[in-house]
View 1 (spheres, helix red, strand yellow):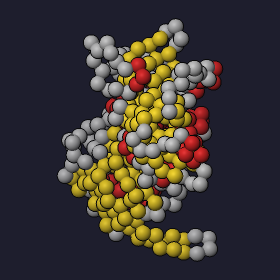
View 2 (cartoon, helix red, strand yellow):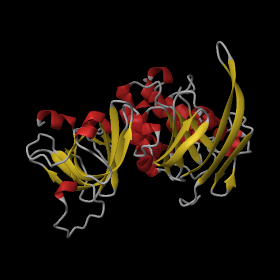
View 3 (cartoon, helix red, strand yellow):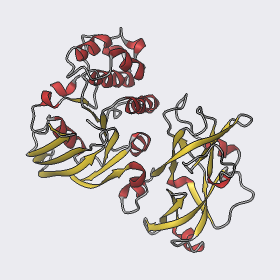
View 4 (cartoon, helix red, strand yellow):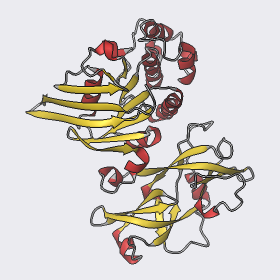
Length: 398
């Protein structure tokens, strides 16, 4: 399948939801295009139909209508096995009587084709080499899920479907798995579809975002665009954030810092690179010009009309207000443009009126916390908040 060809998805499904007290008919109607590479996240509140949609794609749920087309190959009407999809459930579903290696070998012997990654590659990507001799009951929750992901990959699927794979994993184990999933997305030539209601996971992982509510498609598009849309509820969440693409400019070894530029067209001979369009973060690995994704929480951005001359906050960027949305009676979200990328600030309505903020007004953004999302980091994504605090189974076969 060519990387240029999108995946065509169209599902219609109606069924009766049986609750403890009453029954209700649930209607699922989704029509979207998914990129043929990278990670597409399906996001929405619990009960909105995310898992049902994924199960319809896999053929585990018999939808009234399901069209799933991979580069001209229609698989929506095929039996489960013939769809050639990998599925990772919330629970690991490993074979308890087999070792980790036995689980992997079981999948590898039943692979759909010879086009998929090799066993050694998958073991390295998911860092499970030391687990091969163990049985599933000797693994932690995070280790089980890494093995489950590896097992699905070894079937050589045309697409990997993940249904909230971190739901039963503790916070400490989540970060390594998220990092491994990013590594997979960069190395695999197949798309991944990731279901979650956790916005933090999605901002770290996804390239493309589908938002659902009550069985319906609310919106879909590139992650960077979707997170900054004020007409979507995703921008109103308490943990809402935007994701920016930046590039490494330089490293400051004396203070163990790295400078990142929001201007992506770096020129090696450009000596006039704008210093006011750079972010300062904790020292990371990488060379000049390497791309780094950063996450900026909306709650950690404040607004000033003039550039502060004496401030402990290292990251102060000039921007222009492009939109304003009142969240409730007390708060507002202000959308600003900084060199073509959007940053959101959640402030009080009192501050909005006190500063007379309006569309087109130039402002300065003070950013307290910047989280690095780059998969090139040597260690887990660093949070530069400390700087500021001191200085201001082939399961789809079944």
